Length: 79
Length: 336
Image (tube, rainbow over all chains, first blue to last red; front, side):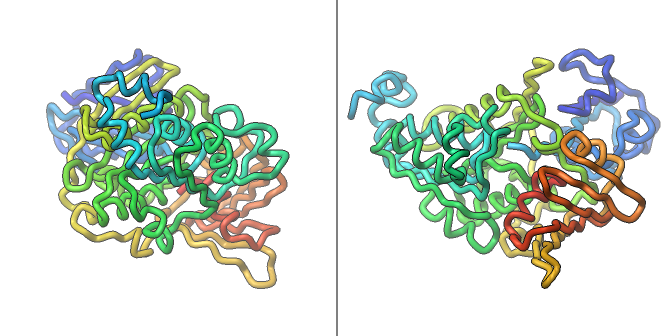
């Protein structure tokens, strides 16, 4: 099982989640970040800036493992 | 020690010694929008000795909703943000040496701007200049505090060279993806830059005083949903900046603007973008201007300006020869 948290505007892709509530998923072995975004969550990769897996930045081809904690962020440029 | 600082001297984390250190401190604030104005006003009021504020923009009415240092007179007088900030803050605390600089911060000038700084504060609206700050911070071992805010969401983290992960560890130069959210395309409500800017200010005070616990995690706040998160980040083993390769400071990356001879247009190139999604871009831009597109190009009209944007991220800004203005519009609407 992996734990996924969607940040900022990405929350709109899972409106049923309560504030601060993570999503828990059972994934097939070899599932990449990109596949989770596109096929499981329905989030276009264009709107994703940063994916952390266990606190470390990972590319979209990174293969997830059981127990991973994933944080997905849009690009937050404003100031 | 003059009476104006008495309440923060009573605070045991600062005291008289801490106040002296603040008075000896030099901070550089890059970008003077919502974050920058909050940071600048707080640090000048706190009695930091030298405050240098750099910004390339003028003040517009839609800034006043959240950029606390500016007023309607500044707009009527056509003042740049850096100058208006300097003038207002000199009336707040005449004992602080305040320097407002109107400039587009880039790899050719940033080392000059941060000379003598004890800390750099991020008040920017784009990733590119943040990656440049990151390079100059690591090269010269100057701590900096990242802050970003859009919509109702914001993030901040303190980067201490050699001690914490750097900004590039989690914000690589090129993701191959476009459509950056900015305040001009996603909107912003004032509480979020106020909170993020205040956290950045607290970090600056702690660094200058040399006390308190620094924020070494990525703090993420959404004031609309009421979520407060901290994310432990780790250094990326292949991060070029951490290994002493400063690609943004060397000018190898970054947006380039070139005036097109005889065409009254400026071309803006962004090597960080490999492919833009016109569909996503349209979704953001149609909130603020008129957008039409086909598979080859996207036309965007906003505030009397016309931009033509191509799928590789290239843009032509029409009816101007001002390269700095074109870079600014690009950062505002497409994002860097």
